[in-house]
Image 1 (cartoon, one colour):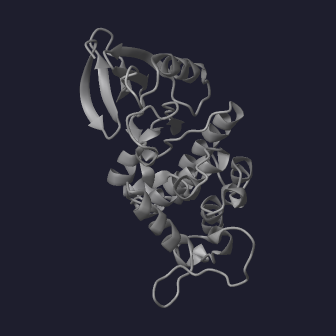
Image 2 (tube, rainbow, N blue to C red):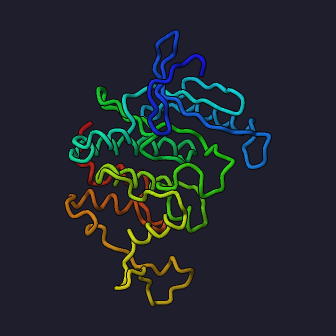
Image 3 (cartoon, rainbow, N blue to C red):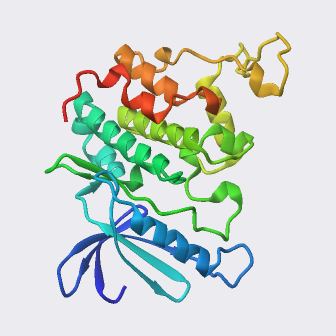
Length: 286
């Protein structure tokens, strides 16, 4: 990054300033050795970057510059003041205690995801680190990094597991629009509680935590299953909680929306379009 000075590291992104122009950007970098087994080819990554550069929406962070140094790629996105993860950590007066602020963040996240879906894009790494926020303009933008570039790692180690949906852990592992809805729901809960809903990077631990959060359990703490002998695998017989019990201080509409986003079965999750029309946003004013 010879042309940029790094000012601050914010989890996955670096705040940098261009030495000549003074322009501020948020830089994401990743390592990819296309000549080695398990990595993506350079042509695949170039195609991904080209697709990112074509994205154009008020709630999607623009990719301003791209450069490469050896096997390292650098993607420079337009600058916004904060990431959502920083606000969750340092400004709970805004995120956790101000419902209208949460509504604004969530609404704009959903608008960005709707645009992604319309473009055939599934954001596989949607989490607070890639949600950029400008408090002065009240603007939220998602940084899209393309399909996961960390080709040297196994499928359970791509990026952060904590925001990945049950179908990624338990199978069939398809990335589709309900997958992104789950990720938004996890970020929604994190705004409410101030901490990640599922904070782990081990697939077995994540699976267990998802089941404990969503499912009823018996006196021994084991996940309950129906005895109705429904056809299909064990997932068809799970008995689920009423999430109102998990969030007793929230208004009914807020709990209803997050519970519909965090359904175990992807075909039962609320769509992005229906989420944007949910009663939770009835009194929303941008």
